[in-house]
Structure formats: C-alpha cells, structure tokens
Length: 338
Image 1 (spheres, rainbow, N blue to C red):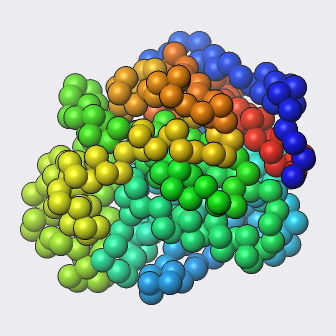
Image 2 (image 1 turned 90 degrees about the vertical axis):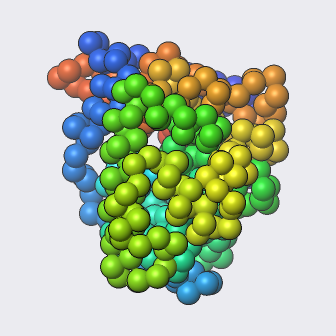
C-alpha cells in the first residue's frame, strides 16, 4: 500500500472538512429528522446476497452493484445503527456516494435487520463484533485484498470501534465512525430525559416490532414471551430482559459497561476518523473522548451542529448531506492510492 502523507490528507480533507448547517436548520431535532425527509428513496438498485454464518444463522448484504463484476474496485463496508438497514438515509446515501467515486459499497445488515427474523437466540448489540469481523475476512477471502474501508453509524459505530480495537489485523485500511454512543450507560440515561424520550419511544417500538416478528417466526428464541415484550417501556428494560440475557451479560448495566468503546479507542491502530455533533440529542458530553488519550492515527471531529447522524447542509432548495462528501473525501487517500 502506498504511504499516505500529511499533504495527501490535507488536500483531500479540506474539500469538505467544515460542516455548515442549512440556514434555518440548526435545531438538533430538525437536523436528525431531515435526512428521512430528504433521502426517502434509493437512487440505485441494490444487489442482495445472503450469507450463512458459521453458527447456522445468516446475515443479509445489500451491495451497490454486482460484487462479482466489481471485485477489482476499492470497497466501502457500512455498519448501520440500531434497527437500521439499507433503507436508512445515511446508508443508501453513502453507498451512492461510493459509487460516484468508483468504489464498491455494501451494507452488512445485523441479524434480523434486513426484514426477516434471524434463526438463532443471538441477535445483535453495540459490542457484538463477531459477525462484522467474519464478514470483513470473508470479503478479503472471496474477492481478494483490495483496499477496504469500514464506516459505522451510531450503534454500528460503537461496534466498529470495539472491533478495530480488539482485532488490529482486520483487513481494513481505514475507518470512519459517526455519532457513536461510546459510553452506553450514560447514553441510555440521556434517552430517558426531556425530548430525547421521543427518540427512545421510536427506537423501542422498532425493537419490539422486530422482536415480535422473531418470536412469531421462531418461538422460544428470545428470553421473553409476547406478553412480557409488550410491557417493556424503556430501552434499558429491553436490554435488561432481552439483549443482556441473549448474549450472556448479567443485566443491561453489565452489557453497557462491557461493550462501551470509549476505553478501547487508544487501542485502535488503523487510520480512523470519528465524527460527533455537540448537539446530538441521543447522547451527552460523556461520549466525547479525551483528545490527549487518542493515538495519532485517530482524527476526532466535533461539530457544533448536526444532530444525530444528520449533518444536513446546503440550502432549502439544494440541501446537501455533508457526510456523503466528508467521509469519501477523508477516505480517498486510503482507497484510491493503495
């Protein structure tokens, strides 16, 4: 791989380094919600593929194009957020941005997030790194060692940080982490306050609907029944009764403390960009790392505005998704010069 020089990084990053919110749209809730209004439909036809996992389950992939025909291209792997999918605006928007750069983009759906319940007792969570690790190694084995970048959003960002720290030999040339809840316990408490409870209600409904489909399709594969599931009122209860029990944690707090990526960030060795918005309504200042503790290979960017995976700029008539420029520009030296 060609060496990346500071000059290379500066030239590429300066194109889109600074985020400027759309005039009149600085509000964090508006920033968080706008992408779902502006990016409702996919602008390409995805190529779907199902992979059987070593434990008898499956994960579904959504490629931006036929991977066999594009096996020679640099790759961009996306890990979505809680109950996200290809249909999440940040996911299909970034796939399209990757296509414009001549890269092969793919979304790896966490178990049960592609629309069909997974078969096993395991589901997914903020620290579940085995499927992501297995998938990245599978790509390298199947299609050769082309330059590869990984991008994780929200829950997927915390997972990606954990995975990079635990497995420094992963076939990943660079990574980007966006709006990640690096301290899960504090983020959970934050979601139980003020307007953030609206987001908790929304996410919890998605989780419960997904769990209901799983219980109906595969009875007995979750540690609750439908009656118990309906009674859950907070994300912490869901993690207490389901996430923690399905994955061997004592309770939600044990899960949060063992799977928060913050303590692991200094162990990341790959070039990594971390992006947070200071006004993110999903979390508070506890997710902001101590810059002095981060290694030189990690670039940390804290924007004043942007909400949670929002970052909508441009104008009312011509809105722009800043992440769709910032992420590819930052990754270009690692993918195009390798």
